[in-house]
Image 1: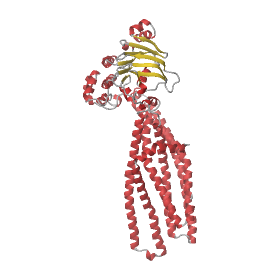
Image 2 (image 1 turned 180 degrees about the horizontal axis):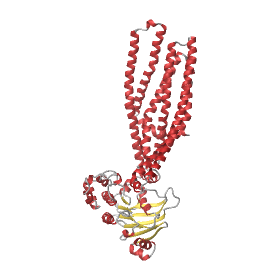
Image 3 (image 1 turned 135 degrees about the vertical axis):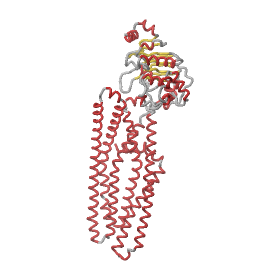
Image 4 (image 1 turned 90 degrees about the vertical axis):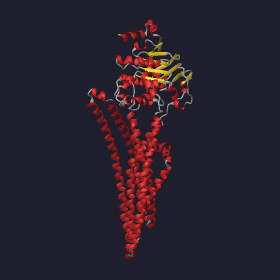
Length: 582
């Protein structure tokens, strides 16, 4: 089953990359053939010289020796040129295949549903993109080359030696299929261990990334020893699995040594008898020994390559696993929408997360007019953030429909839909780079002038101008060199540049201090003008001026109206607001 799966993986996911570089591959194999033939000629030259020397030493002239030496020098020059091509161009082909696969994998990861990243560690994905694909690159170059060389040596050696003494040749070569058959068992074991090793290596990457990105939290709690222990546990586990893989490599090596010893024993025993009876000459015996030595070296090389082969096959399987994840359905949509007014409707919307059984939202209905400012409040777990995530189609509905200006969002391309919705989140993510690069991320085609104008409208221009390189200041990993309020204002500037007709404010001020919150409130007030806005808030004082407040609980929309209406109602909102004021 595992072998069939591997064959399918090769044909479906790997061979197309090979075919893209088939001209280089054919030339590489041609060069491999030339280097092999150069090597195969040497035993025949030695046999010729030895034969003449043992039969009639007077015929072994300097002219003849120089001729043989000249032939071999010519062959070595060909061998050098072919070897250069194999090492340089052949490896370059592997690098290009690795590049193509890496780009395709990353492009596919950009298309997979957000739910996949909810349950997948980034460190595991990094391991697949880097380590796995590097091993595939080595596999793609060496695999055809090594098997072609070994096959050529076996076939040519067999043909040459059969012409000398068939019985001795067959008796000697019978050990070769036994070697390959004996290696199959260990190959399967190694495949399993290598796969486990990749998973654990991914865990080491994920744990390391987690600890280093959270280094401020680690140090603030004085938990360096805890992080070291977690890392050491994963590191030791990886070491144990690596040791297991080398155990199987050692056993496989023992099998090869046993059978190559058998080949030599047959060669010595039968060869000695045939030599004694005159069926072969001393020159033939010399040629046999050289060819057998060459064959054993080739077989050992193939067996040693088994580790690289299994690494490559494991990498291909893990590559295929990523490419087989279905992309978000929206990538198959064809329809785009322009001139959006901002009317949004939720019709009988039902949704639950894949890992959960109960519905987060059930048969929810909501109509939002263009330019309306809707505040969504309620206890945690009521589905506030989920509702807004569904608007951007980060997750797929289990039932119902969401429409913008009467158009079902399932009919829209994701690019068209998401360009219409701007999101300002509580947890701001800024990319490693400059202030300007982060602002322009909202609209890559925007100009520097537009970015500066967006920063002014977001209330970020003044503090940006006080930075060392102003808009070209490097802000560190995740904007670590900026305060929370500064990062939030840059994220708002990013949305200003995008200029979407629909806006989602997801707890945009809840993590800020009072002074920063006042700055951000002014920026958000400017941002929401003329846009359909959904504001998710726990601080109810921030939503008093919303045109409509929706109270969303596990039971659905329980209350809605303006602040004064809901306070007069004396229900859930009244209770939540009173608690927040206290």
